[in-house]
Amino acid sequence: MFGGSVLMIVGLLFAGVLTFIVGAYWLIVVVPEGRGQSVLRRRLKWQDPVQAGVELLKKQDVLSDIEALNSLLERFGGFSRSLKITLDQAGVPITVGSFLLLSIALGLTVFLVAQMYTGYWWIGVLAGGGVAFIPLFVVNQIRAHKILKFEEQFPEAIQLVARAMRAGHAFATGLRLAAEEMPAPCGTEFKLLHEQQNFGAQITDALKAFAERIPSLDARFFVTAVLTQRETGGNLAEILDRLAAVMRERFRIKREVRVKSAHGRMTAYVLAAMPPALAGMMLFNAPDQLRLLITDPLGQKMIMVAVTLQVIGTFIVRKLVDIQY
Image (cartoon, one colour):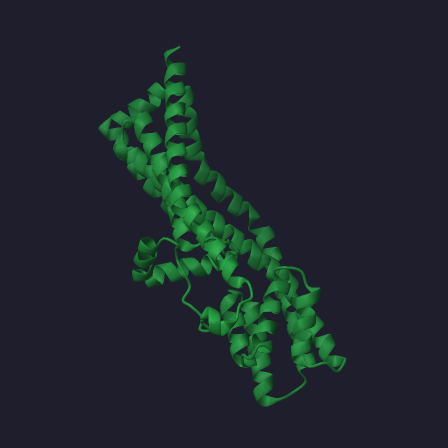
């Protein structure tokens, strides 16, 4: 009876804290961003450039719609730009400020709940700090999946460009065909590449931006081959056909390596998730035994050492199964 009451109180506290944080996030982030999007939609309506005072210069990327947070993030230029590049490569349509506020809100919620339930701040710090990195982990997984999908589609797109050139079309026309025929994400990137050079950018600059936008070795191979052919000459269609064959072989080897290393990766995931899962089960099934481990000074030292070794072991296993080829 007493345990049920405690769980009910903790659940109500968790719901209250979560409601407060989500409400604050909505008022501070979502509402200003919605207003900014409404203003943008109104500005996108056609107006006379002279009367409307339209600025033709490209403005600097906004890291957050909250002015104070945007100024703060601009001071940490390297970190903010790196995180923005990661979000753009993953295709997540939120600002850096919104992403950081979401991560902080999740971590703070878990920190408060863990501290109220256990009474120890350091357990709340460990739990909240771990949960705060979950959004970054999810974004990195989305980014990796998008890159893998791009590498799978890329050889077919290159061969489509080569076939167009062999039929007598220009290289720019081949890019447009690849943009129209290929699905996302490969078609989206080729569309952006074609639009950049179509609207006045030098093809060299557009190709270099293409390679910087996509963190894939295959994209750099493609850009290097095209730029080299433009300087030295040669049959670009034949070069692209051979490059597509090499990329298909690399992708096949990559899939084979992932299959052979799947056992090691699954072992790493299971070993990393087992201690937190076991602690969570003990928290609800045998809280007295877990409380003894938390309250005893020796138990606290054991937990610190175990968490440190767990993190080190996880990184070592990930390094072992991350085979470069």
